[in-house]
Amino acid sequence: MKKTVLFLAFAVMSGIIAAQTPRKDKAIYKEYQPGYYQNYILKGIEEFNSKNEAPKTERRFKMDYTGMNLPTNIELYKSYWHNEPVSQGNTSTCWCFSATSFFESEIFRLTGQKIKLSEMYTVYWEYVEKAAYYIKTRGTSDFTEGSEANAVTRIWKKYGVVPIEAYNGFLLGQTYHNHSKMYEEMESYLLSLKKSNAWNEELAISTIKSILNTYLGVPPASVSVKGKEMTPQEYLNNVLKLTLDDYCDVTSVLEKPFYEKVEYAVPDNWWHSADYYNLPLEDYMKIIKNAIR
Image (cartoon, rainbow, N blue to C red; front, side, top):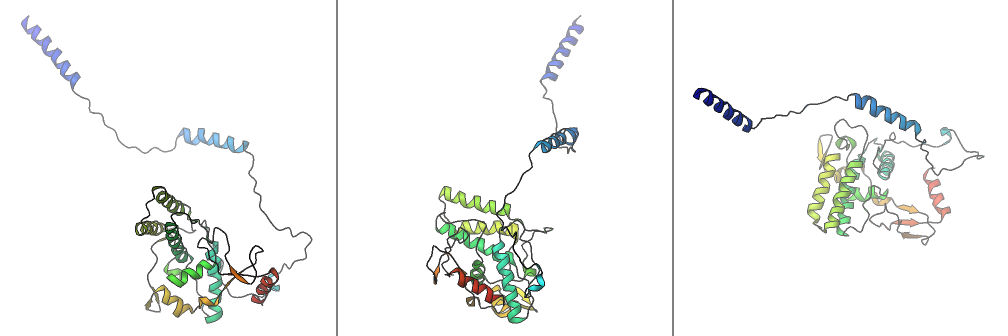
């Protein structure tokens, strides 16, 4: 009888101890492939919604050439050497691509050299300058993606320029430029400085450069030409042989006095350049006609 009681007591105690022992659960990460929900349910919903959505239409302002007798043969025009057109991708840097193409043709006209220059080298330093001005003005200047064609000469005078093989601005495997995320990061960072009033220019510019380096790469401090190392400024002066002060900007606006240098007051002219010669439309068109003869 005593043995029976002792055995029962031992069994009860063992149960209590077992119940108090924590259970060691475990979990693992497991990758799941898209299943029925993704492949059928979501797909069916998307297909139904797309069928019932009204087609999106775009409206664009476009010249109506109806009834006009215009030349349609390119052979009727005098042509000059130029590099093949290059896509700016998703960057809002048409100002740089167009002006760079113009100067490439000028280099050929002046020196006979067929050279492809780096647009992104110019864009990199334009963003740095734009951010520096934003910081100096305590966030009152425009920090947008666009700029003006004469930003190219302004940047080249300060930073020089490099050939495309020295700096193309692409990430590994990238075939088209896309600055959407890069711009969002820079804009968000600068807005945070404005909100916190933390205007440490050295730190801010270092951060902006870090963002640019991530998406575009670090711009070269020198280039090699026929085995000779030179700075981007030396490349501009000694190889390209461009005298940038020989070029001027013209415009034709009614709200400014004619035959004077004026500011082209648009957000893209963020540095408030007042170097535009304002001419009557007739004179403006004469310059264009004389330039293409």
